[in-house]
Image (tube, rainbow, N blue to C red):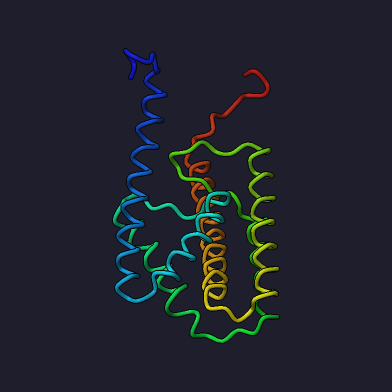
Length: 194
């Protein structure tokens, strides 16, 4: 790439990162899809992944450092949203109120990016919050129109879990940032020149 297309080392690293990320995410999706297919929940899985991708791409969240831990945590979260939480009956009004709380949580926490990506600037943060607001409000409108559909219920729980883990990710990131700031030695300055 560097010889033929004159890419810099940085550009090659970015391309490599994106290709490896795409391969990793595709393989995890196929593994989870197979798992949910055998459980008999493939349509619910596909819908849950769609909702998760739409929301997570603009808000971020918890990021695992290893492929296996990411696969395990994502599978556990999706299993909870697809197979366990829909068994809990929640009336539409309460669902809408919970989505309002998710909206507030996303406004507080979004975006939380991976440590491998640069911290977003003010404009990116604002864009992320606007996108999250639009997504959650649109979902609330759909939930209001089609409250009892099983897929809508799965998507609702995906939003709840995504928003909760986003808040946890934000708290952990701020805690790590404070810890790093405390570890940096402060050089004493003699303000009197002595």
